[in-house]
Length: 186
Image 1 (tube, rainbow, N blue to C red):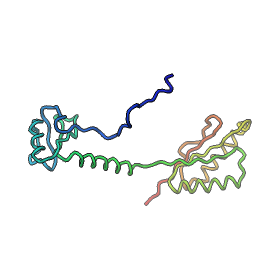
Image 2: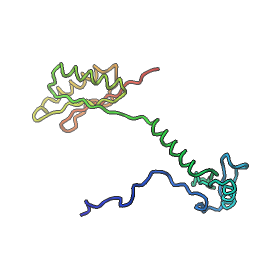
Image 3: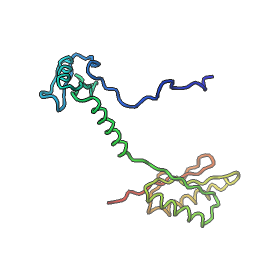
Image 4: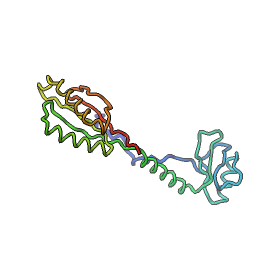
């Protein structure tokens, strides 16, 4: 059976980019840059490798698509470490969107509504998006209008905390509305 076949039979692959180093660089001429190079410019690859050996460092190809490819004379392990740190820093600066869900029934009473409204206010003030939906069970799908009115009232009550990203929309047995937090002015 094709379903039982494993996808990767080898060890897990790291997502570190592969840079060509020293004798792996097969292009005849390269452009040298970096703090270890007295005169940046275009050199033959063999000359650049000799320069790197003289400094007891590595010749690392950092931009293979340039014409000629750009190389740097540096310690390869240190270079990889710096690349990992840059990736980690970019990842930490990326915005993480959190979506909190709030579920209603078409005949939700006022106390439950107020309780869920307070939770939604808290979620929006913390910067999370809110996905509120009315779930229609069985024949309660006949009360679509009630569900839509409930969600619109919910959006109106949360007007000062967030804005409507998507108006109520029926998807199967759920009527969904999305609210996103308002930007805090500093």
